[in-house]
Image (cartoon, rainbow, N blue to C red):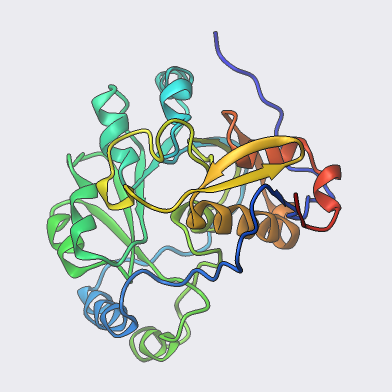
Length: 285
């Protein structure tokens, strides 16, 4: 049976407050690649002459699915697949691309952000009809792998490489705001492309048995935090915890510009369902 979720994240978005079973030190997350390597990636990629992601008129009634890599994607995948078969566009990111295709779901588009070279595997298997939206930060080998496919390039706002973009594009470039993760950037990138209503699958920001719906060895062995949010306990890596806080900050600043429905029982869904209790100060339990 198709799951029905209401759209919208509320007009007064929640603010992050987390009761912690164990004291958690301040978590500062940054890029996972050397900044000079990222700059070199951008310098090379913007010279490829690829079309840029740019603003389009809003399609107010169009609903798109965004398949992220959290563990709840396993349980919610049948619903996502059914909606795709009924015509809903589905966008994959990173490892969810292969996962969805292995389950018989051929995506409309795929989005990548990560700058590390080993992530060039994420674009496979290649799909002729799929549109690939690849960040200028990605390793040049990603673009090489996609040389015969439909590729658009997009740029992250808020980094130190604006001079490269201005040199290449003048004032005709359109940086995408958002947080440190592909999930947060993808929402803003797709909003720029004119989409307004999103159904998010696998957007958990916590561990539920596994850290992803599929094997991703780079994340094995990460330290796990025991986090209590509004009476419910979640296991989170530092990156999960940081993403959840960035999500709430993002919603507080830009949430009025899109509607989100988050499937599954992860931390993000729990935050959306319990806004009032999240307005209190953080306390260590």
